[in-house]
Image (cartoon, rainbow, N blue to C red; front, side):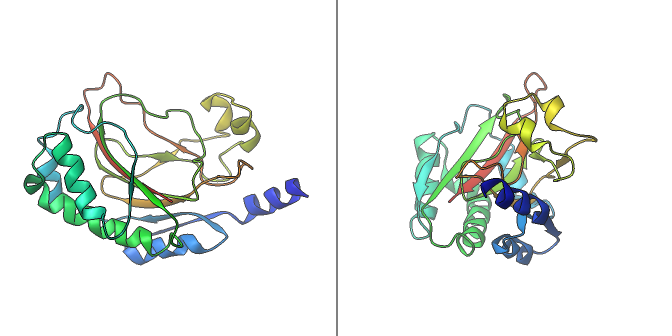
Length: 214
């Protein structure tokens, strides 16, 4: 019975991609595993991020709520010896994204990450153990993901390498400032969007990534 249900979900899974933030609400459709907002680069935000170094914001998870989010972001920056006033456009943008995420998260508890890195992170194609995850890459290469036709789910679940997980072609990639909400796989049944972080170690590039989980 579980195999039949999983197969049905795989057949129905789809991606909704558009140029308006309204596209993000379509993640609530049971048939959708990715809703992707192709928004333009916010240049005022990008300029603020130019001062960040790879070690400025470590990859840590923080609990938050819609009420406390703005203060939580500012507190994180102060802990890392960053002046929140230097990142006013970024903080406003993060607040907007949190609002979009909260509207589709069904009131579940949220955690956020705001990280800088020049290392490889989750380079194997995987499924998140979350209900939903929002991802926005503000600087550096974006998240890579596979369509349902491209992914060998059985290979992914048994721990096979990326070469065995991808049936054909190249992965799709989020561009800078694009915002995606991904369905995860908290029950570990092989459903949800298969994706990975791009390999950047040794390239000299710094990624600035924001995530929200519920």
